[in-house]
Length: 437
Image 1 (cartoon, rainbow, N blue to C red):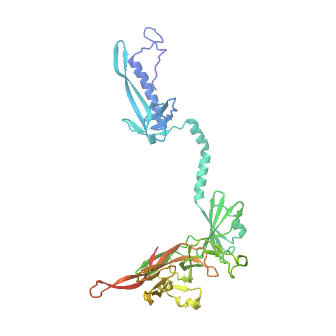
Image 2 (cartoon, rainbow, N blue to C red):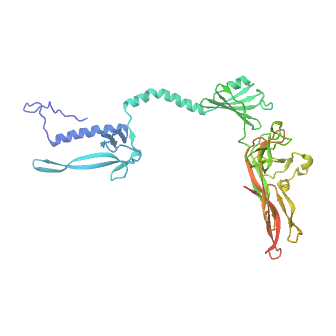
C-alpha cells in the first residue's frame, strides 16, 4: 500500500508539517484509491454491492471498478441491462478552462441496450460477512441434510426369511425387502418382495408376487389401509394386416384374461317396475339417461401369446359352451360374424306386391345395410368391438381391467374388377373388415 506523510513531513531547512500540494500529490492519492478499489474483486467480477431504493443511490462492481448505481429506476421484472454512462467534465480556474479534466462514470438499470451495457443476469448479489457467517454456522446441518438426502435415494436391499405380519406392519422406512417363506398373502404366496416408499407423512408398501402381480397399501393416520391391486401392467396393442387382427401384450398376471367386448345400448330405465323387479321397485318405473357401454361379448376369452410378440388370437372359452361351443379355437372374423347377419327387408311396391331386398342387420345399427336406396337404408355399417385385459369374476363378469383397444367390425361393398381387362364393373360384392378407432 502506498502512504504519504501529509502532516509530519520534515524539510531540509527544518520545516515540519508541510507537504507540497501539486498534481503529483493528487495523482498519488488517486493511485491509492484505485489500488483500494481492487478489493472489490473479492466478491467477483460483477455484482450488486448495494441496491438503490428510489431515494438513495446504490453501488455495483463491474470488472473491478466500483460505480454509483442511480437511485432511479429501481430493478424490476423488465430490467435487462446495467448501462454505464461516461461524462467528461471541464474545470474553469484562473481564467482558464481545463477541457475534460474530470471523468465521471455512473451506472443505472435499463430495459434497453445502450452503447456500454452489461446483461443483468451476469451480476450477483453481494453476500455480506454477516450472511457468510450465518452460512458457516449452518454448514454442519447442511452437510448432514445432504448426506441424508443422498442416503434416502439409495434403497437398502434386505433379505428376510419368515416375515411375520407384525414385522411387515412395522416396516415404514424406505427400503426393498425380499421375503422368503414368510406370511402367506394372496392365494397362499409366501415368496414376494416389498418396496417401501415415504411420501411426506404417508408410507407406501408395494408388494410384488412371483408372477408379477402387484399390490399396494398406505399407512396414514396411524393405521394401514387395505391392499389394492395395481393394474398398470395390463397393457395390450392391436394391429391389422390385410384383414388379420394381431395382438401383443406385456407379461400378464396369472389371473388376467384377454376378453372380447361389444358396444350396446343401455336400458333407459333404471327400474321397469315389472314382476321380475325387486319387491320395493315393483310398480315403479324409474328412468335414467340412455347411453352405450361395452359389455363382455358371449363371455369370449381370447388366447394369450408370448409377452412382447405379435400373434393371432383365438377363442379359448365362452360363457355358454352348449350354445357357443363352436367358437372355440376360432379367430376374430368368426367370433364377430354374428354381429352382422344376412337378412331380407320386405318393401311394399305401388301395386301392393312385396319385394325382398337382400342386406345385413348390424347390431347396434338401426338402419338396414343394403345396395338399394331408400328410407332407413345405408350402403355400409359397423359394429363397435374392443379387446381388453381384465380379471374375471366367478360369475363371468369382469372387474375393471386395463387398457381397452377399440375397433370397428365393418360391412361394406366394393366394385368388382373384370379379370381380363382389369376395369371396374358395375357389380358390387360385400366384404367384412376390421379397423382401429
